[in-house]
Image (cartoon, rainbow over all chains, first blue to last red; front, top):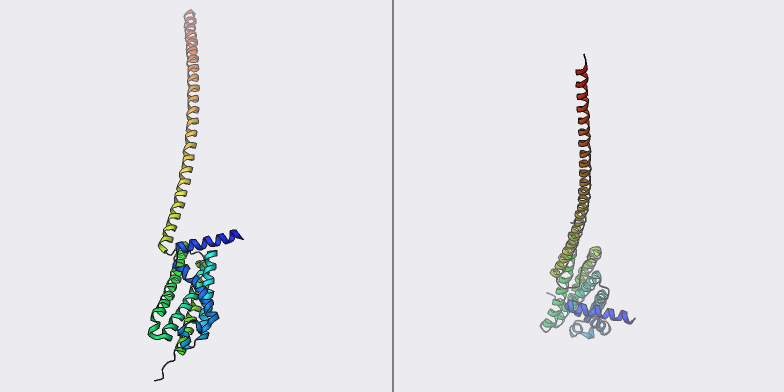
Length: 142
Length: 129
């Protein structure tokens, strides 16, 4: 049990050293998702303004699920799981970014664009991994 | 013109984004076999490509080492065969030399015998009336 825990921690530290961005943000999405699931629209002024309680719970569920997927993928080094988790986080972050900009208008530009940037960046990572998988497949077929 | 309510806009956006995400997930599931091969331990594709190249070169080096080893074995085998052939050849040469000497002696003996016989014939012819 202790050894398993130690191995998991070491994998996490390795991942943090080799690819900090694509590990930190998904892991932080887990508490964010839990908070959004529990508090609903009260977690964000923008969603309170709009009244998007269902949407933000869907977003929270996607972020929580995505974060857990990425965490498990780091522990088991499974690329497919990481890409699924990142896709879910792209979905959640894009919804939150759009919601903040729609709900707060100009006042939501900073937070909203930040979240849209997170979504774009992770979408880019997923596409990069798909491209790499395809290139590897092609080089193996040769 | 009726203003679009933000909630409605957000719902529409969420539906679109959800559809896109589902499509992306389906795409990922279809290609799961090749995606599982990807090395995600680094943010850089170049590093992975370089690692692949290095491992390929290591394999090449291993193959060349094997080849050199087999060639070495072949060379030493040929050397051993050459040595034994040389030994056999020397032995045969010695045998042939001995045979030659023996035959020379025999020829000399026979020559002597022939000389004696010739002389005897000449003597007998002279004695004939």
